[in-house]
Image 1: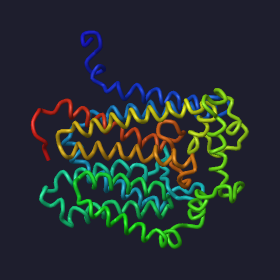
Image 2: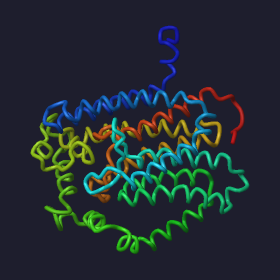
Image 3: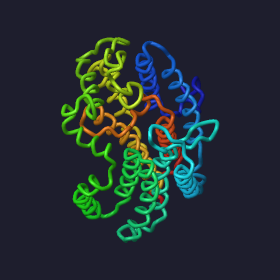
Length: 372
């Protein structure tokens, strides 16, 4: 086989790429239906964005370890400065100030911070002496690196993205070997502070989203409309759905955002439980491959980097699926590789590219003990 298939093609992780391509194609079919049976305006741009970002992922996958480590802290500083620029001159859309208009594209810097915080903390812990992993330095410096971008993102305001940044960073800290008691103390502190954060930290519409999660029917035509219509769409799909391009909730405009945040509900109405299980199975394959890459990494930096990227993708998937099923507040987290949107596709393809990069490092690594 190696004599028939060129080596650069044969050594690609096709066990992950083929399911990913199938998922993106399935997403394009769902977006085609969400547009009323048209490739415009969602499906075509979805496929074009994926193709462009796949090339970007391939470029990321080719980067040498030394270059990545050298550019880690400068990348963090640049993205942090971009978050500052958003506050100073960011574009305002839908009541939120989250974007930078660069002329040739509109960029959401907070999305870039999700993978950047992972690689930054991986670099920090890979250079931290093992004997200091239980010291306060191992906690305070990473906590500050996370808190700075989270604070700026909360100002936009964007609770979902700030939680995603914090989640990716926390996973890296946990896997780096910090004492479990610190996380227990942090969890207890979060529970105690939750009421204060709810009443004094969240805006009124954010409070309403949390309350609606527990009883969406209390205001089914107001704050609970999104979740109610999403649950109707998912439930009406049954085992095998109403059929491709036959979804009534999305076609009759009952389901809000059928092409972005609630694309899973659009899919489930037309493809039913079978379609939902297919999507979850593909995500499981991708995440399982990513964890395998992390486990096989032969140095601390690569292992933490890969695990953090998997955690970032997982956060998108878990929160979106819980959200559309009414088990989490509506926080505007799209479904990876299926929702229409350039920023989320960019972030998730950066994660895929980083995992492919670590996979290449693993393949080329000399056998021996773990390096720092």
